[in-house]
Length: 480
Image (cartoon, rainbow, N blue to C red):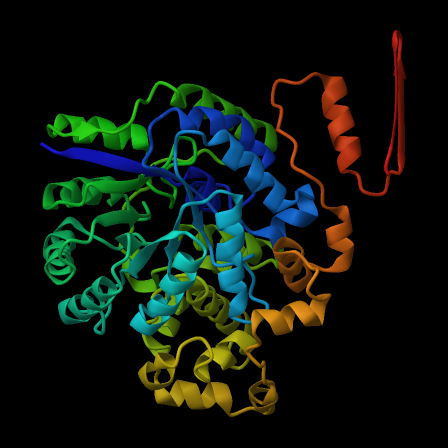
């Protein structure tokens, strides 16, 4: 039998799903050298969630990813994420700029998505990725709805194949695939995208992801995205250790040696215990997933946000309302940013006590077609009218964002001498935050109390000078 290859997505999807994007780059660095020894087909990275992490860790992400690239001596580095992830408006040229930065740092591949699986959007992003020297992998996002039929996936697979990507990735971000659906869907994609290697990216949200992956292997998908414990399951991808064991029992060869994973698991488990992060674990089957279709990471974030405002006891109502909102908004595929729009609107409906009494600016823009023209026609038209029939909607509609060229954006933020990385920061990160950023430092878990104290004091932004003394040791530090 042929070889099954595994892609590691632990420091991207794994930590996003299990640790709610709370992994610093410093927590990745020591593990990176070991992961590089495993033999993965690629190691996937992304810019993470800088708007959340920068105020916590003050890490300069581009310096961090350069440090990771230096540790990936044997394994291709894959970039995922079209830019510094943000819901703030930015010109579309920033995505191509992000590809260019990733290529210069050392990435050789990128997975790229469109939440509506639009071929013309894929075409633009494939072109931008190739111009940056990256091999493009098109995410064919999976969903369950009356619109997402066999005919739909046949047509989109055919459109993706016309672009001749490096691969097509069947992306099941919401964990909706079942063994029966894989058996019908994979042959359709193979028939309509002949000769294009296929990859599977599935999240374990219903407890079925491992079984689905095994069935996909039988059907001929021999590149599987996986994670390293404790960043496995709990809405993330299945454990590579478990997947490899099952694949071998089916008679296939695998591309990895699991021995270097032991130190990684021990290290990340120690970090989880020290920081109070959860340990990933297989989930129980929950049929409600097929109604609300929220990604696992977003369910955890939504529960935390409701807790912060005193509404955690309404979580079940929010999930039920999410299913209704998803249908009314036209069955959007529940991936970023559309899943956030749907879930947030559902929470607003529950908290307000009246459906669509309050709506976010993003949902208004969604109804206007700014996040995909398809939304305008597939939405429930009565709901669309209710969203747009308010004075604030007129104000939002009146705001026009010209889609400037990269040269125009560069001129606006400082001129031709501005580097790509500095330009990216100036668009997305305010001046005060930029001043606080510093290169990541490898996270220590077995350090002494003195080292821990120094690290905490360094993180305390208000301190300009630190003076410590104990018998036999005097330490003085100051900020430049």
